[in-house]
Structures are given as structure tokens and as C-alpha cells.
Amino acid sequence: MALRGRTECWARTQRDAESSPLNARDAMPYGGKLTIETAAAGLDRENVVEHPEGTPGPCVMLSVSDAGFGMDEGTQLLIFEPFFTTKEVGKGTGLGLATVRSIVEQHDGTITVASEPGAGTMFKIFLPSVQAPAQDRAREDRQRALLLGSETILVVEDDHKVRTAVASSLEDLGYRVLSAGQPDEAVEKFAQHAEEISLLLIDVVMPGSHGPTLYDRLQRKHPSLKLKVLFMSGYALRTIVRLGVQGPFLRKPFTPETLAWTVREALDD
Ligand SMILES: Nc1ncnc2c1ncn2[C@@H]1O[C@H](COP(=O)(O)OP(=O)(O)OP(=O)(O)O)[C@@H](O)[C@H]1O
Ligand SMILES: [Mg+2]
Image (cartoon, rainbow, N blue to C red; front, side):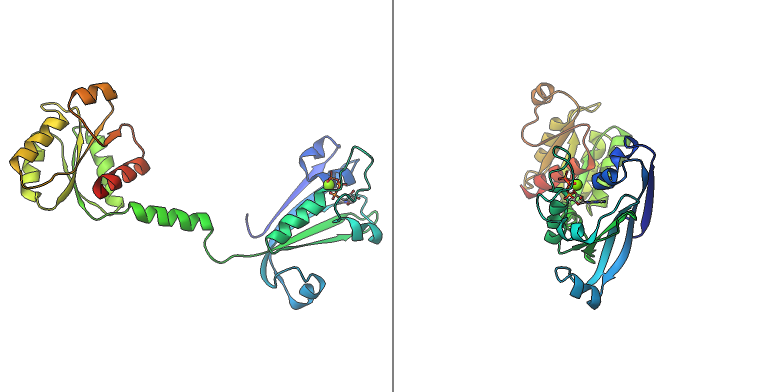
């Protein structure tokens, strides 16, 4: 929600007003202006005496006002009571404002009303503002941290676009990436960096050689290393199993998130 904003709706007929807050609609049976405002505010000591349930300090204010028939003082004292309604049977249950107040107070906020018969009504909701990042954002950050890595990965993929996209996704997560466009180049790169490489990410179907064949070739050349591998392919499972793929497998097309999780799992396995 923007910290400060103002929205006005003109309801020419009752039908037009149906999307507006319902009490305001009911208070303006012949149409009228509905205003919704947001602003940064503060509950000061004076206000807190008036509204002891509110938390003093910086707040966000949301107000809803209408130009309807308003209420006398006696009515205002009762409006937040459950089942209090002035509406005819079948039109109101009297639970609307009781529910609103309960939600607001569960968030350590407060709700006020100002009204006069014939002069409209204004409800204000004050909610304590939060300086810390929203919880979901914090959780996202923690989840992302779990996906980061600094290991070296050799990506073998003949499609240039896929190879570059995979490499840059992995680099964004902190990995060091070596890439090869075809099996012979992979053998050469591997020989140069064998000790540093923690994972092989290999396409299954490539011109010249299949992924599993390349993996066997590398493992035979470096028998003392226990090579971790993750295969990727857009081919049907039946086909890639026939080509010798066992264990973890990345199905194309995949999202950067799936790539991140699958690679991290393969490394930690
Ligand atoms: N904007 C308003 N203008 C005039 N009177 C209002 C306004 N908002 C609420 N009231 C008065 O407060 C009473 C209680 O409102 P509340 O929303 O709790 O229940 P309701 O609207 O009657 O029923 P419900 O919302 O459950 O359908 C209403 O019946 C009405 O008398
Ligand atoms: Mg209501």
C-alpha cells in the first residue's frame, strides 16, 4: 500500500456503488462520494488516552469516508458491538464492524469513527508501521541463501543459448562455471581442472557422443576421482534411460529455481 494516497469514487446509483465498502454504499442510497485515503501517521500520547488499545508510535492510517446519512452519538457508541444493526431484517447482520475491529486489534491497531447525522461518516484505521523487511521477504532471502554455492561446475551443452543461460544462472548463485560446447572440449577442460571440478552438468543428447558415454570416458580417465554428475535433457524419460542415464536428472525446459535446487542437491548428495 502506498504510504499516502487518495481514491475517490462517485457512485451515481446504488448499483454503481456496489464495489465500494458496503456500509458506505448503504449510507448513500441515492449515490455520493466515497473517499479512501492512506497516509503515514502517528498515535501520539493524546490519541492513546482516547484509544488505549492502540500502540503509540509511527502508524499507517487508512480512512474510508462517505457523504451518506451519518449517525448520531448513541448509534456510534454501539456500532462495533456484534449483531448491532440499524438495517432492516435480511439487510444486515451487524457483524461487519465487529469483525473489522477484531482484525485491526489483532494487528495491534485501532479504529476510530467520526460522524454526524446528515454529514457523512469517516472511519480511520491506524496500524503500527513496521520498519523490518516483511516476513516473506526474509524467508525468501533465507531460502535463496540455501541455494548459493562456490563450487566449480563443468557445463557440457551443445546448444549455445542453453549453455550461456545455464552458466549465467549458476554464476549468479556464486558458482564458478567452466563450459564446453561438445564432448572433446569437455574432456580437454576436465583434464585442465580435474581437481577443482565438483560437479558435471551434462546434456544427454549431443552430436558426436551422448552424455552418459562422455561421463564414462571422464571417469575412466580419472579413476581416482569420484565424479558427481547431473544429466539434463528434453527427451522422454524412456529415451534417456535407454541412453544410460541413472539417478538425478534435470528435465528441460527448467526454471532458474529448479536448476538452482537440483544442482545444490546433487552437490550435497
Ligand atoms: N458509513 C456508515 N454510515 C452510517 N451508518 C453506518 C455506517 N457504517 C456503519 N453504520 C452503522 O453501524 C451499524 C453496524 O454496522 P456493521 O457493518 O457492523 O453491520 P451492518 O452493516 O448492519 O451488517 P453487516 O455488515 O453484518 O451486513 C450499521 O447497521 C449502521 O447503523
Ligand atoms: Mg456492514
